[in-house]
Picture 1 (cartoon, protein in one colour):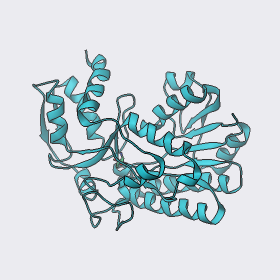
Picture 2: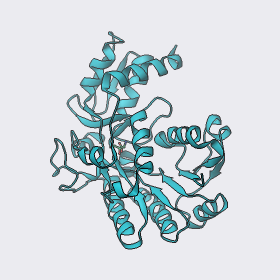
Picture 3: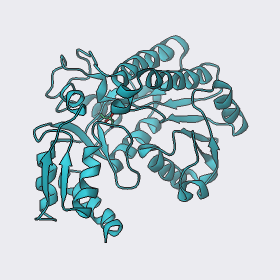
Picture 4: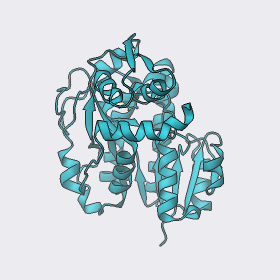
Length: 316
Ligand code: VAH
């Protein structure tokens, strides 16, 4: 099979697990991992790796040509919370990396592109419950603005130049293998670490902040699933709504207490509360389910069981 994959941002929360999954599925030598700096030993020893600045078109092109890349997963981005601290850095990274990959595809040097959007494209004027695929989108973060703009460019490059680019609007993603960096939903990872380490957690969002969330295994399956779907089934060329569950810090606490009864939580909302308040509480992802067969698997309690089981060794 001619497929050769380049993952840009392979050291990130999703990139790390996506690299491992694709190397296992296609063979390590078929999957080139890249990031702005080297990753952990497991990643570096498991297959080809290139240090790459995703904003450097010539550097991305060199790797695409040298390794005869067919598919690119562009996972590099600056997320919502960090993006508010460095607005222009976030805009430049999130947009220039996307243009580099879309232009390589437009020039026929890449066959297929995956680019992650986010529920951050929605804003405080968007319907909060069961947010539709097509609705009012007035994002109030640089991250959300960059993802909304990126969706428009993905659809433009598809319609104007025939680029095969696929995208999903990730909810908050929870995993145990790699700590997330700079997101507003990161509390939902941190809480498991603190529950095991201290049996208590000070949460930077308030108890009632319900957000769309997903366990990493579901996110990886969705990412590879949309990339392996038949192009004719990908009817939405901007980005698909995607979700698995919605919960708030109080729900996670109740789920953790089924395993660690003495766990307690307190709340000290910070600047991320305003970001979270601008996002939906739940997402209608029926189009993804209809068009390319999306099905989530993990519930909150099933995710809690996996998180605590896999993290407890770190805090013995
Ligand atoms: C963030 N984890 O918090 C990301 C995600 C929906 C949230 O895009 O910025």
